[in-house]
Length: 410
Image (cartoon, rainbow, N blue to C red; front, side):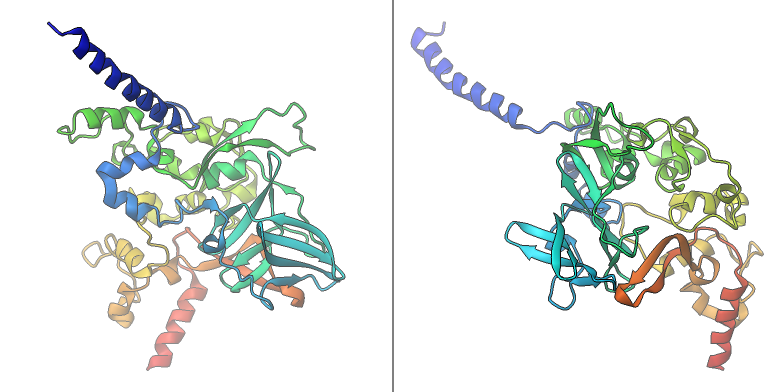
């Protein structure tokens, strides 16, 4: 029999504890996508090595808050100005309240907007700024090939423009989620949309690819002895087409019109149910597919793809930072192209072991994109924006370069 004094002491202890637990629960930030999402941070306890590797990949870093460490262009005097050559220029400036792109006309300040979001980073970075609940692209981007600032893709090279709006489709491939606010005035001529800033989930996180994980986390937290993954989508469980569709959500170009938000797409879904396919000749003919953004279409037009069971994961481990590792990619080629299979490269006798280091430059060369033009400051010099084509094929011009190199060594 518990005495009244003991009962009172228990209550005195439990009441503050219950308040503390309630506060902890209330202060826990809910995932903007809903209660069935656990947030990528919950993956660390069981998948620490995979998580720590993935956060350094281009997918995870495809969008992030803009800061000195995520902006690789220079703010130093003499390296922070882009001149249009007509009296107009943009200067990248450090100010007391942040980092800015500031437009000038004949030396007089015009418009200035703050760096808020960094997009991309492997070949180039572009930047977004908030204006109320609207997102806009800043006029200057940083291109790695030039090691300097230049006009953002598709921008008018004769004027300073801070007014290009960011639509949901941009964020669908450069973030894991952002909630679009209702806009009754949205039309073909008025494409400016508004977003809920607080809902933005930067980068491509674990649940963007594997689906909502709350049930998965709850189950395996309660039953850690169960090693088979429950209530989560694993890549190996998908069919070949499902695997391709999962990547093609963002890697199939921008010519198709999405009729449903790509944020809703989950691994295992059918991509054709999300968009209206554009059958224009330039979108289906391998010869006219642009190398930028349409890796899925280019790969599908390759003989290697048609004659095998390969998918994106055949060459890419998305959990690791492998960009530019031509030796690793070449190894994937030689897993299929062997003497035993009688499909080895005809240049093998001349190249010898060198071929093991680089099949890629010959059969998947970096080619200029027709969609992106890069201009080098006031010289008006157009610099090609090179992207690795995913159409695996024999490129005679590249073969000539290789043969010329071999002959120069003899």
